[in-house]
Image 1 (cartoon, rainbow, N blue to C red):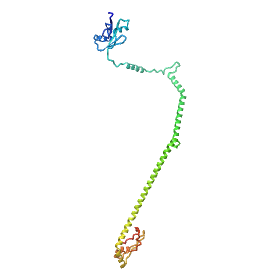
Image 2: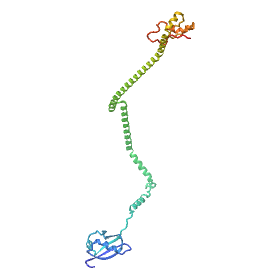
Image 3: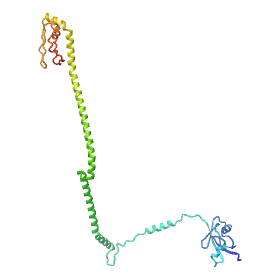
Image 4: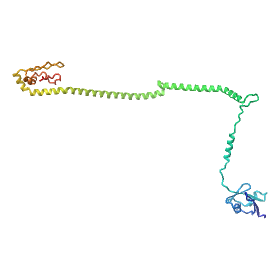
Length: 303
């Protein structure tokens, strides 16, 4: 080996042996992967120094620069391994499995064991728990009493608030109620007055209508009777005078209202025919200016 060259040792993997060759000191470090590729014929290689520094085509420097870092050795040692695809790892799953095994270990129960005095450990533990509970009893009672007092105070406040709402002693609520009540009272008074006026008006209208209907019902028969009597008087006025002078006839007096009429006497057929004329010749006391009532109209004789 000349002074211008340097020995290079490349440790490979099974079944390949360790490679040994010499290269000039001025050889760039980035050319080492291209020099080793044809020797092993691997598509993907990973070259690194003995201290774990990776070497690739982008690495700068020469072999002499690597040699100056380790001046005691007269050669360079590299490690060549193939690149493989990474797996899923598995370290985390191993840790979880180990933790599960650790947690699944059965706990030791020594309560049935005895101490040097002959007492069981379970009895000692129960005595210790009872002593701790007795020591903490005053604090627990105090906390319970305080909680009951707070609850009672809250109930008293709630009762006072409800009483003030019912009795109207609450100032804020009283103010609100006064404002709202005055407004509601005015509205209710107006509504009551409107309802009363409308009701009285409707009752008056109904009363007037009933009175008018009664008047119409009372006037209809009297008017018809008076019209019939007037027509008969006009038709039989002349022959009634002549017949009254020549022959006597019987007349039927008008019976007062609500009294039974006396029987009518028949003299002859001529008197029956002349009866309307005789009725019309009576004095005009019954035919006043006002229309006669239905009950005061003279009754006709039966044929």
